[in-house]
Amino acid sequence: MDNIGDRMTDQILEDAKRGELWLYDSLDDDTGLYLIHSLRKKANDANCSCINININSPGGKCKYLFPIIDLMETISPSVICTVDHMAVSSAAVILACGDRRLALKNAVIMVHGVAYGNDALQKIPSHEGYLEVVKKMEKRMCVILAQKTHKPQSYWEKIVKSSEDKWFDAEEALEVGLIDEIIS
Image 1 (cartoon, rainbow, N blue to C red):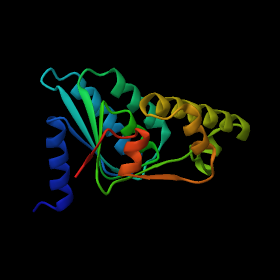
Image 2 (spheres, rainbow, N blue to C red; image 1 turned 90 degrees about the vertical axis):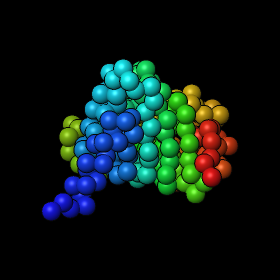
Image 3 (spheres, helix red, strand yellow; image 1 turned 30 degrees about the vertical axis):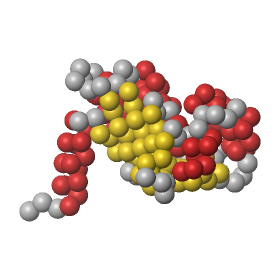
């Protein structure tokens, strides 16, 4: 007898064949590798002219953020990103990099600086060295957001350097250029 998890996995795999991808969890190892693999596979599919990434994610690891963005910018099918409920942290940057960016009217989007913790520090020889890497990632993220939105790099740098998370509802996200259209 099938369980709900098996049926959902089968549906996600079937959707991926049609260019429908899902970022509906944290951007962790499984989700990050799934998106990278699926984007590469669809980029090589001659029948695929458009990929839709459906987003409802609390964000996640930067180690997948930048490769996903690089793929989105270099593949030939256009990439539409749709926020179904929330695009937080790295998911917000992925959203901003879509060729077309949509959000449902009750969606929320959050941008903040790169978060890091003890697990990462254990793998880096020095705390200062790790902080330099974080600063470079934050700068790159601000450059990307400035290129993709209506706001200058200094606007995004102020948000990233703040200790507060910056939340946008759909209207605010449209105003700053994180999205192109609100779906109602």
